[in-house]
Image (cartoon, rainbow, N blue to C red; front, side, top):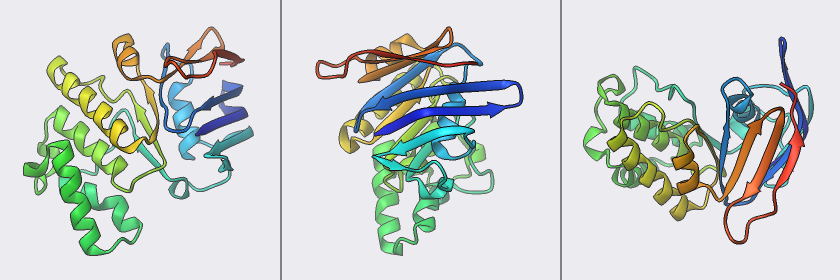
Length: 228
């Protein structure tokens, strides 16, 4: 579960909030809205990469507002992917597992499992600088989920891909969510993505955040104010 309680983010002349919303446990939430309204700011605040000026952020019922990014149990794929240029594909998949001080055999098994699911087993020893856009996207996603995060945040993960690759990664995201039930928040401008993936939808529009359930058992719609 992801919850904002009257959260305010201030950066220069830009102000987001106070804003409140709740994403249900195990939901695949899609956040839409025009450029510049604060969608990425919301992800960064959840991650702890951007401090908040007011309010509280809760993950699975626990107040994490003051926690360090690495303590929040979050997998994050930024829009630019932020792959490490001097690391191989294998090293990216190992990254969070080593930070968690997992045993070597566990790391090896997890990397094998992920590379099989993501279809990148043949790329494990390749430099990320020699990957296609779709391959890079899969590596970034693998790095984000390798440590079995409680929350997965995706910032326009399909926007830079061609149509065929986009369809492949689209199906991959669905399979990952089905198998892990990780609570997910996905930013997109694509109505097609939202319709296919979302069990909850959020939209920043005209200074308001609308949150709606799109599955049979989802919560009723609600609207909360946003100042941008």
